[in-house]
Amino acid sequence: MNFLAPAAFAFAAAIPVVIVFYLLKRKRVVKLVSSTMIWQKFLAETQASSPFQKLRRNWLLLLQLLLLILAIFALARPYFDTPAREGRLWVVVLDASASMRSKDESPSRFEKARREALRMVDALGDTDQMLILLAGAITEVKQSATGNKSDLRRALQASEVSDSPTRLVEALKTAESLVRDKPLGEIHLFSDGAVADWSEFEAKGLPLTWHRVGQRSHNAALVTLDVRPNPENPVQRAIYAGVANYSTNAMTAELELLFEDELVDARPLTLAPAETAPQVFLVSQESDGVFTARLRVEDDLASDNEASVVSLMPKPVKVLLVSRGNPMLEKALRVAGNVELTVAADFTGDGAAYDLAVLDDVTPSVWPRVNLLGFHVVNTNWFDGFSDVEGPAIVDWDVAHPVLRYVSLDNVFVAKSLAVNMPSWAIPLVESQQTPLILAGEPDRRQVLWVGFDLWESNWPLRVSFPIFIANAVNWLNPAAANEERLRVRAGDPFRLNLVEPVTEARVTRPDGSTVTLEIPPDAREFVFGDTDERGVYRMRMGTNETVFAANVLDSMESNTQPRESLDFGRFGEVEAASVRKANLELWRWIAAAALAVLLFEWWFYHRRTV
Image (cartoon, rainbow, N blue to C red):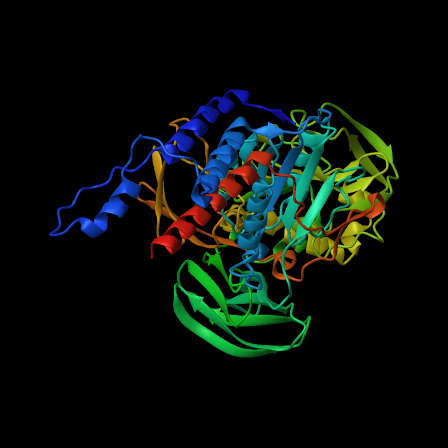
């Protein structure tokens, strides 16, 4: 056995001092009485002829000496001489998504995960370090690598759960980069495992330990909420709400619809296990406002029982079609919805009088500055170069994009198309082996939908999918619809607003009533507000203008609170849940605890004798 602080043995000089105290005789107090005859023998025995006496066996002396020896050993910090090893690095990933608010653990899943992480802090060895990542809307480093347990506990206590969806893949990628070159690096994930897809994460050889939290799935939730004009009555609005039951038992609930906090309609619901029930409300709307759907039900997770959507009064979409003549395209635009169509053979001006422009195989001398749908046209500022390709076969299309919603291109043939290199401003919506056929993006701060082929060079206008595509394109390119879509964000995602005139500050009122004031640079062209972790309605004021937007959960993965049995990483295997591991504590702590026990026993023994 060796000692880290051998100088502490100097305190052993206090041992003779304790013994001397027990060798000293106590000075007797003389008392005068009426007769001292019977006291003579007693006085002779007790009178001290010298200051010292013979050391006698005394339990209190032995206990005090043992206490002193233990205290000296604790101060000397004894240790066993073992082969040296590198300290471990523990990367703790704490899931802070909405499902971690579930109350099936006491008081919540997040609090249980925090408690287990705090126990890991207590288990750190002298040479070990820990790093804490909070996996919320973004992966946040709450504490860099350190062995200071006070800092680690403070970072865990400062971590907060949010209403955002799970971002565990991003968090584990960050954690993997931190332990990649650490032979003793470990990743400890505290989560219920509610992740939709792990396929993009390569977990081969990942030193991951998963600490699962959660006991059951007893939850009903709002998973979708949308508002559209009623196609049968333009005066009315249609509110679509999807309600799902993720419990193993049937659940009864009441679904309420409110407009500007005033109750509009309510209906009772009975949901079978694993059932999703779509609900449609038809209501009149006379001004801009916020519709709120509220699900009254007794379940484990309250964050997904309410959602809001901003509804703006519909306005006609002013569309300019520049074409040499295309009756099928013109007809598809006229039936696309509330459209005011203007047809021209050429384009002049900047198009400011229109909401969007459609170019049909016509290259203007001056390009419109509004949102644009272009067929078989090329802007040299958009592409490095272009060429022609014969018979490009459609091999894939992005069904998740709003423009291709309900659009099938299985039976569409293209005889000839422009071939371009993928520009940085765009994403491909429809692809062939040789070139992308349809692109979407925002060059020059406007939305652009580019189709590489001439409609006359394909059979697409004869297919049912064509008018659906045109209706989707008009809705996506409509500035009013785009602005309304920006007013709906997922909790945790940033809210963005284009600035049409200079402003100096913005005041944002959060759903809990608190207000945040942000300064805006005078040359800023866009305002970004990222503190949207809380579900609810946000009200932002810039000067005399007020903008209202809503943040919601609306995520089936978060609402399905059934704890996962394993994390499936596809061809890289899976990770099973594990419990918290204990590490060895320093030896001096046990010695100090023994010294405290001796001190308490001495106190008890002394009082037992004197009572």
